[in-house]
Image 1 (tube, rainbow, N blue to C red):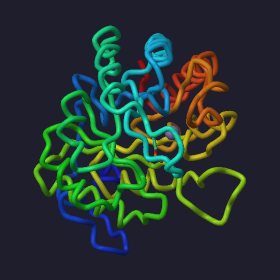
Image 2: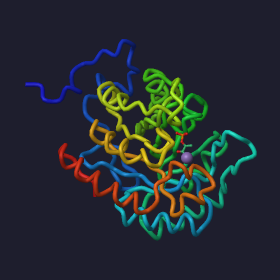
Image 3: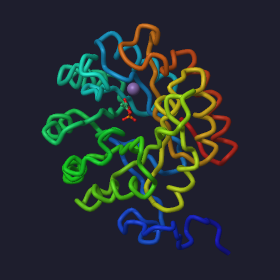
Length: 286
Ligand code: PEP
Ligand code: MN
């Protein structure tokens, strides 16, 4: 008897790219980020500030998310801001801060790379490279991170279909790098009450079509701090392999994305609630 419906040959209504397809590789891919495995039974929580702003902000937030149960630290050093006049990130100084707090906490680090010219620098510090929503179809960048031997967190383009998302991942695998995590982070729709429309149906769809792990970003997916816990819990319930969430020690003072960042006690409470949901579906959160 077939127990895992994901193992049936699937038809998506489009040609599923070969390397990412479950038809080519039925078993789950497990991505290993400096010892933390994503895609197994554990649901991995990635947390930290939108941007690295200062030593104190990063270190205090990192220590707090570590004690709350986060397994990987996030923090942008190179930020893709809509306005060129907004804070663009601390650059290499931010990467150095991430490196120091990684040694102290033991948390592997994921940080964004925006340009092919930054891949060498960023991969010298990061345990996982983030390709952001705005760059999901930056094909030279996808090829470059595909040639790199670091895991890649690929965020869905805000106007990308599932087919385009999988094709973007295929670019990375095609260069020989199979360590790719797909991240649903909300898409643009006619709706304006949320920052984006978090497409949770993408999770079971991607899990069915592909062997790659799938995680959800309810912070960018909603833009609303109060809604993040509800959507994080829903994401775990629909089968996400992990979450990436923005957490800030003082969200009201954040330079970027404070409105969607959880404070420390909200994060701690959410982790307690997520553990119960994970347990109910036969998974675990450390
Ligand atoms: C981020 O994670 O900080 C970010 C900019 O996300 P996205 O690319 O999904 O907008
Ligand atoms: Mn952000």
